[in-house]
Structures are given as structure tokens and as C-alpha cells.
Length: 149
Image (tube, rainbow, N blue to C red; front, side, top):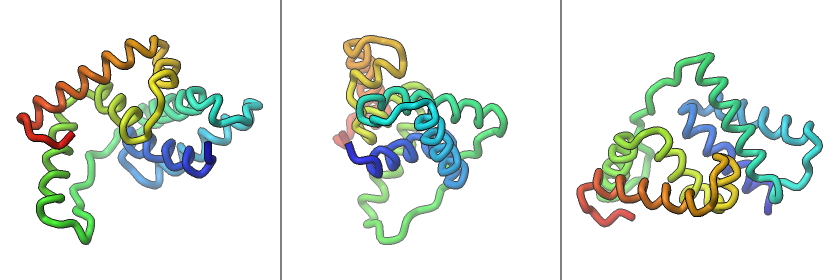
């Protein structure tokens, strides 16, 4: 597994949790520092441990500072239809609880294997599959049956 790719995934995860770019960068760096200080060298084999560190740091940071709401900035160059889809998906995601959003981010955005997610949460990979399926079902309901997924 490419270290740069893992770094990007951990950053996205931290950004999702903290919603502030600078803070997510700091927490991502701290997570990698703690990971390597612990004596772990193989990121691919210990990916669950790295996510656990990042998750705990995000929780600590969230407790110290209240997270700000998501920015409503619209990136340049988006087509109107794509923009509307993104807004609809984002609104539906915000209606899900934090645990479901985090699970969908890990599984579909960061493409973390179910076995690794199971290790992060301390559950079996089959429980991960069930929870992901439930979260996807909830998201589809929030989207009103639209075919975004």
C-alpha cells in the first residue's frame, strides 16, 4: 500500500470528523507520528491501528474545540446537475447519525476493507457488512429513492 495514498485517506477521514482543513492536517500528522513512534512500520498491515489513532485524536480534538459546521462553499467548475446531486447527497448524509456517516466514509470513500473497519470498531467483518448495508439503506431513504448510489 502506498504511504501517500494512506496519508490522503487518513487526512480525508480527519477532515470529515473535524471539518477544518488546518486542524485535519495537524491531526493527520500527529496520527502518523504516533503510529511510527509506536514501532509500527508496515502501514498496510496495521491500517486499523492507524485509523484508531486518528479516530482517538479527532475525538480528543473535538472535545477540546467544538467543531464548526460544514462550509457551504461551492467549488469552481462544477456543472449545475452535478452540483445539485452533491448538495442532495450532502444533505442526506447530514441527516444520518455520525456513526453511519463515518462508516460510509471509511468503506466507500477511503475504501477501507471490512476486516480493518471491524478491527477499528471491535466487531466482526460480518457486523460491518450489516451496518454498512443499514447505513446505505438509510441514505437511500433520505435521498427519496433517487439513484445516486
